[in-house]
Length: 145
Image 1 (cartoon, rainbow, N blue to C red):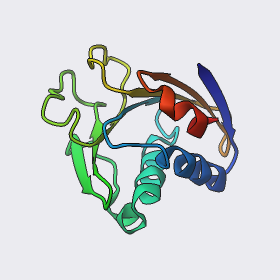
Image 2 (tube, rainbow, N blue to C red):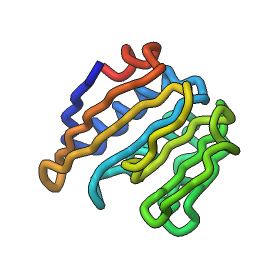
Image 3 (tube, helix red, strand yellow):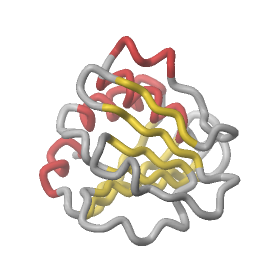
Image 4 (cartoon, one colour):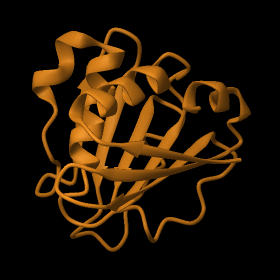
């Protein structure tokens, strides 16, 4: 099922992240695609904050560190940025927490884990279109609507 979300404000983005967070079990992989400044890190910050409000200030872009880990009250979140990386070994994190990957265009084989694909299109300075699909994650569809 493909879900299209028109996001026109930071409040709408926070609301979308909050809705998604309510159904996450901590074993999912969220693959984010979009141009520079599309909102991948901002979405991740809002998602981590929705999972554990005390963690929001910890979230920053992992462009140079490649991976940031956030310990939340529900489960660990692994925030990975593949902008400068050609190959990344996911074996240590898959199934051990929520994995959020920016610049996920080249990822192919992630096994049977629940995956949320989010492709972000920039419409203008304030508006984004989020195209969302799932694989092995039917339980998330109600939260994504």
